[in-house]
Length: 271
Image 1 (cartoon, helix red, strand yellow):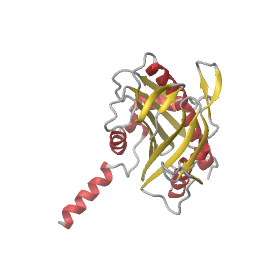
Image 2 (spheres, rainbow, N blue to C red):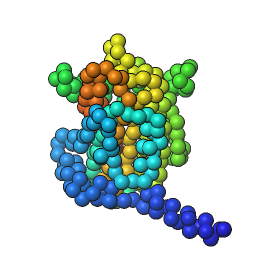
Image 3 (cartoon, rainbow, N blue to C red):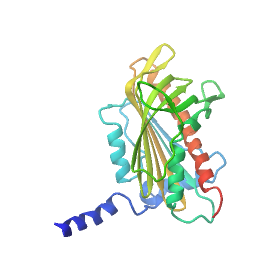
Image 4 (spheres, rainbow, N blue to C red):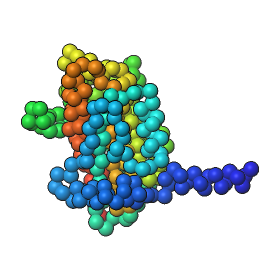
């Protein structure tokens, strides 16, 4: 029995992505080339895919743990819209190929610093101006009491973590969210779920527990592959799906740029 378990354990190490995959393994050579070229441009916008009818995942990297994480996040949702983003963050020249434990822990800590989302901006195509995404954002102790907490800190990197937050979105108002985190040797994942209804003006755009956002950071050696997906069951109001989908698409870049700024702080100095 011990021998059989050992064989299974070794197989599991390979199956769950302990050994970092290359960018080409994750997205294919053609898309890898597009992402590398985009990462060298000044704008560094993500590849975006917006689907408003019978959505199918098209940009998700081929990573077994990520596929399971996304399936768990969207379970029972029956989404009517999906917005995906794919972004490549190139580490500074001369940086070691894989992230070390200290860098991975630092990056994870920064993704749980939800207060730093307050004030990030995105370009609103409908208004033609830069607009604030979250006016306020902070961790709370519980969805009912909603007492504000400081951003968490960690003595060691946890395998899993659950956080609750209150965020005021200038499009969908103030809402309570649950964040679920999962970490591994080559990845950091987190998901966001709305625990309150999201309204656009007087119209309830997305009901309670009908929105998920997933963000995945996968170490590929000289770069970090960042995948994000906004998944929702939007209200069946004429034009609402298009409005919500377009809003998520433009704002997704803001979140990716927010993460890129944190990555600069972790990897910005050449060792």
